[in-house]
Image 1 (tube, helix red, strand yellow):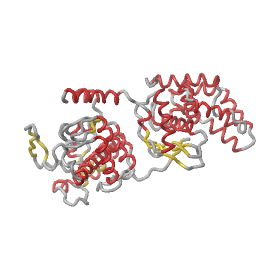
Image 2 (image 1 turned 45 degrees about the vertical axis):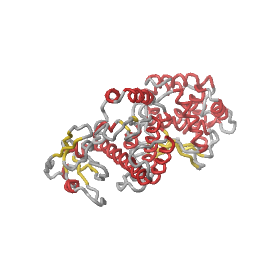
Image 3 (image 1 turned 180 degrees about the horizontal axis):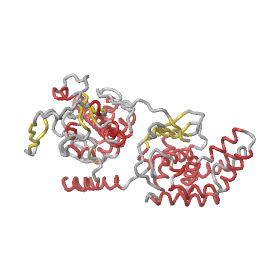
Image 4 (image 1 turned 90 degrees about the vertical axis):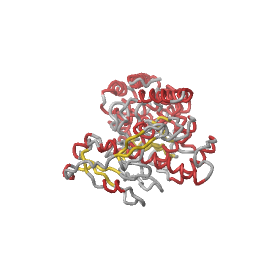
Length: 477
């Protein structure tokens, strides 16, 4: 069942020493979509290249980078603290035997490195997510100006960052191309959108430039007040083609690293697995989700799904639930109740809601309701014997609760989710899920509940319609 929830406060812990508040989807997506790139030094890639690449200086092994990337993704998605990440860092370093980097031989050095990786990735992803929000056309119509805000909690503030605080310029002023924070290591400055009435006619300041000579002896011209490599707007280049980025990076890497990188990239680019969009809990609930997601990944992919957590629940009000914010239509999570009598089918059902609401043609809208894409599906569902039974029950049942249940089962998004779950069971030939479908059909105590799933022959045209929907996007495997 889908469920609307009220939005909670979304904010960033700029101090970076405790938990981060609940992330926003743009931040999560920015980090998740990065490609692991092996590097020897922190400046092997610079500026906007970081929008596409996840790097840890000196980390050249694919599995080592993948573990760091997973840990950072989890830190953002679940609001994990620096103390949590330090423990993960130690575990990953020991697991892969990663040593020889500056600070690797002391606890203080490892703590310092963990903090750098944690704070840099979380602050940059926050900035990139904010950039996407701030450049949304609807927001730019009402608030086309940006205001620079310096964080007053910084113990040793950069004088120029303090001087820029309160500066208001149009969002497309060239100043923001190099001065969109963070503007250096540990920078906690941020940007907020303001209306035209807040603009006082100020011009972009010009404090001159400084020259930085890199390891190869190349000179880099950088605006004063900006650290080397930070003179760019995180997220601004995200629309660049990934394929060109990958090709350029492969050419720039040593041959063996380039081949290894290409192999890793091929896996990522060709993978649009639904399982990548759910972070799983431990224990029995996580095991159920993993089982179902394995079957789904073998059947079809999905492009562009956001990443949300799968959670366990003790609720007796529902067997499972897909939740989203009604104000933004952003997905929140999928929960499986410990009271579920059909856990595998329930998970597939809620994933069906998730896909219906967040993919296909319009994210944030249930396509099953009136999207033309679903026209053939809605037609064959309406022509099915099970739907006829539900309609009859709705018209003739004397019990109000029974009529309400039939009405609920007849709702477009519910029929899609139930059909999708049965389609996964059928096409994967998962006997556990098939048995759960048959158990519902065979229920003699509730005719409406029994008709909420379809007999095999009744379901055949519906299954074919679902095949066509996924095939039209090239997602069917």
